[in-house]
Length: 137
Image 1 (cartoon, one colour):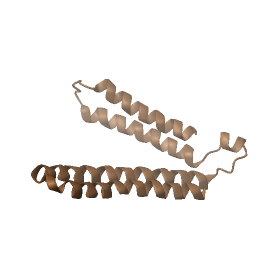
Image 2 (cartoon, helix red, strand yellow):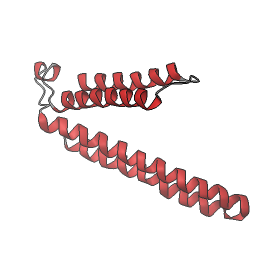
Image 3 (tube, helix red, strand yellow):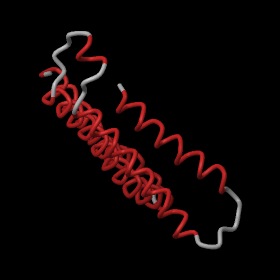
């Protein structure tokens, strides 16, 4: 739970930094972005370590959440996250091409929707794999 809190803090920090810098001119944007990325990666690594080695509340409750459970949770989250990232990239590419095709030939709308559905299926496969991983824990 502490790892999740640290990861959420990193996400909130990144969103707050983006909100604070919106519409402003930054003298060294690469340095600001690099600092934010380094801070975010540090929080992400700390959250991953706390997730992999849960020793606080889980051990006090007598739960059997050890290193294997932590690695299982990390694997499930990576399966879903990377599958959704890949699906987002696929939908972006296929959607742009589909809009171009439908603009030229509107009768191809049904075919392009099938291709978009296939691209979105990648995310569903990731969720299914993560559910299978969580079912084994």
